[in-house]
Image (cartoon, rainbow, N blue to C red; front, side, top):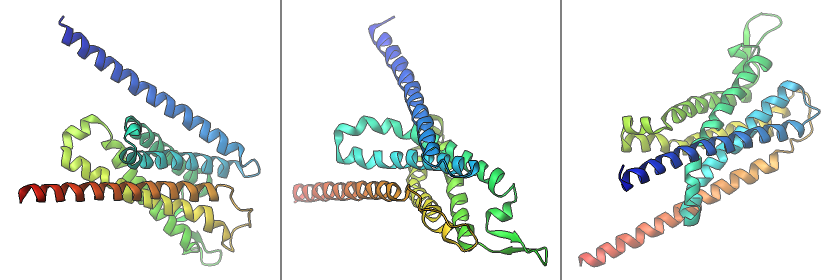
Length: 245
């Protein structure tokens, strides 16, 4: 076997090993995150404990995946972390699915109309809309979950080759819209839902401030990366124009 062949095999083995390590690390962080969120709400019912612990951990993973891209543009030394976006996104989507299953089983008892804010009227026996905010938030969450699944299925080398570079990038760029859907969905349940007069009053959720901080950091990173990219392209266009004169 030639030296170049041996080097190629070592490179493939290393890449495969690193892929496994990333999955293992993210899986461990996922377990730790769920544990911490569970322990932080000991007075909640088991369903809401698990619902929020899984949902909040998934939110953190997706937030990290959204922050890595702009961070790598701003600080070149962090570019190796771009490899972690796939694993963070995949486990974020898996947690979103588990979060949805917990709600279906433990909150609305597999009644899809209840998932979207309807309840049976005690007199007429018909479904009537009683929670408009709950309905809108879960519609947004459902749309976000469907797009999460599309992104997860496209987050592999086979899909990239199948779709082609241009289409694959177009699908991936939808992650920014997805992020906004996730933020709105999460914000409703953190700040609004339990203020409804039909629900039992609760103490403020301690996760509100960390949520605002995390969303703000991601937004600032994205804005700063946009400004840097714009400046670089502006300079390159000016240089090209000057050279053409």
